[in-house]
Image 1 (cartoon, rainbow, N blue to C red):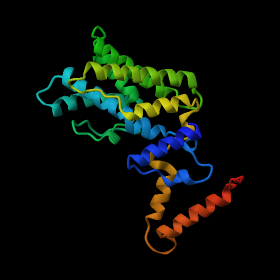
Image 2: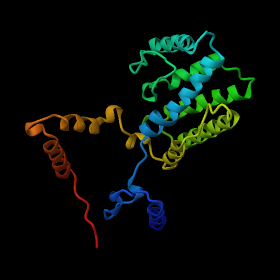
Image 3: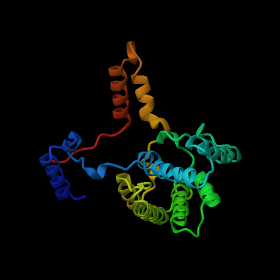
Image 4: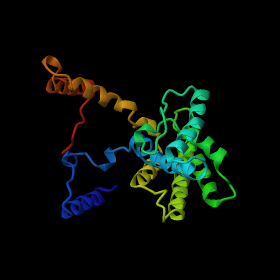
Length: 246
């Protein structure tokens, strides 16, 4: 984003009574310094939304049972088989109608199998769901350094969002599928043409989680202020500070 466009955006934000982060007042800091995080964009965003909509459709339309709870239990039996076959570490302990999105992990390959098992490809909506699951799997399969291909990643992300948009239109009355703002973030991430693994945040927020855990301790050298200052000083010692030119 150009400097002029960025400043005009900030002006509009202030005119609308919205806050602008003070980080953007730091010399040399702009939106180009911000990187999209795949974990929050997909794992905790569009992937979880897609899974929730897809699994809800399966238990509602494809699984027999007198209640949602019974149908979810039957559907989880298929998921549990997949877990055991692949010795998955990140397992959802059970499937409930009221599950939180952060509990849906390591299920991307599994929902593709469920789609292949239950969906009827002669029905346009279900064929679209199947293709969406395939594109989502293509996105995740392309994340490792050994398989990374920016063109394939961008194409899969673009197709997935188009399919999701088609399903949103098809199920407009039921509001089963929706394209969320994080879909735009995924497109931005894909267009950067750099592997998401270079800037993503690992499970438990990784380093940030470790620092917060240490800083949360009470008393002595492990006080919040002491730990925070210590981490900052070590970072400054290990990294050369940028030289700002007038």
